Image (cartoon, rainbow, N blue to C red; front, side):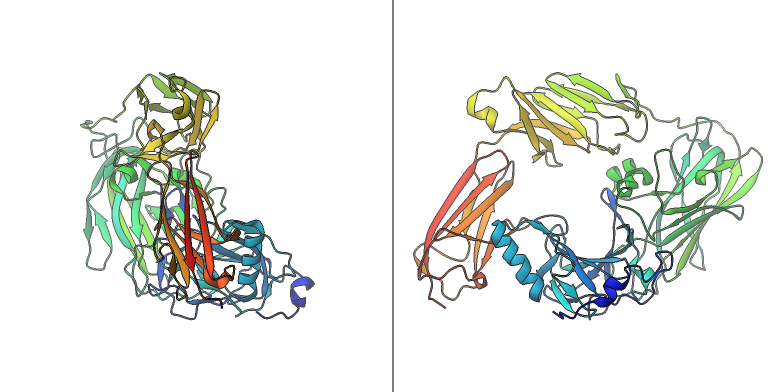
Length: 563
């Protein structure tokens, strides 16, 4: 790594105003053609995507280069999330982020390894001094990988402003070829008050779209009355890939007048979970398609909405005809439009609004405590976006806590009385949420005397589960009392079927060794290049602990020529 003194950095951290985006200040982090598997602002589970996911030709180990002069301000190594991530600070006040790395490079790699061995932990978060790890634009800083919660080899790349808000890297001149128009999948119309109706329905209505010769769409004539909103499921594909990525801008007009302008240019991490208010959450959970609502409901503070008239809603009057238009574009200004002709007419309602009333009506602005059987539920104020009836029931050790068709913004606490359990079983209990297979998924569970508690932001079925089985440990590339001089690594499979792996620690001849945990493959890997092994005969000891405290110990002897 280049060690030149970065005097420019200290002369002024704000060479550019944050209101004047420095075009071409940042270079591409990779020296391969940029093809995206994910775009900025793309709709993800519970968040907007905060960068570009750059394909790496299904390979790991492609060199990553610093996009601009600066210094390493943060390094985070985690099993989940961004995996191995690197954060650079630049003289103009911006930062760049590089995530899911296979390894860091040069001085950065040595720095991280030293700190991991000092702490005796693979998982680590570091904040180097601004003089410890300086970088020059174009320096090699790491290698692409598939670490953390990555679904395949790629580089996640971000540019953040001085307030740590992620911004669309394409605004800075990062070039991604794109000659394709966005794709329109679905358009919905939503009645927005008690008197509104659409095609004889008081509920959301899916509109039938007709493709026109020029590539635009026209909806079949809509008969409506009252306050109406619209929503759209749309994606974009860049050149060279079939991935269904996010779009850049959605604009709407009503009889030619601007109504709503949505642009994926910048947002803050504090607001990103409001995505669940922005989309039709229930439709997504039932149909796996995200409808973006082109109107602002209450408790939606999203800054990606740049313009709105009457919160994006339209008012349809009796006897008037009108046209509502949606224009979807990508960053390269490829566009597709949807035209919706509307006839204002109040008619007989055939499909009234569906509403299941229950004994548990929750006011979103008030804290609520509910007891059902041995379970207690505490819902803090503003955990939900709007008032709602919840369907809650208990059978034995199972809590049926509504269906996951309503979004939760702030954590709700579920607690359960475990006094009916005795002795050792009580110490091995946890609260699990049942997945689609009916299997419990571990929720972080705390204990106070005979009560267990867990926090959640997902409705569903929760069950009290006892895990009395220790994790399993199996060597993959070595055997007891065998020579393994040609091995570059030690690979060990660890599994825990119920509560999951909590921690592990490995030593060779009593010395700590750094083992990287790939939770997607349930594999631990130690690299002999760390030079901990110095003897011919070696004793390995590995202790693995699950989330309720069951532990397993594995010991083996292997032989290796001295190097």
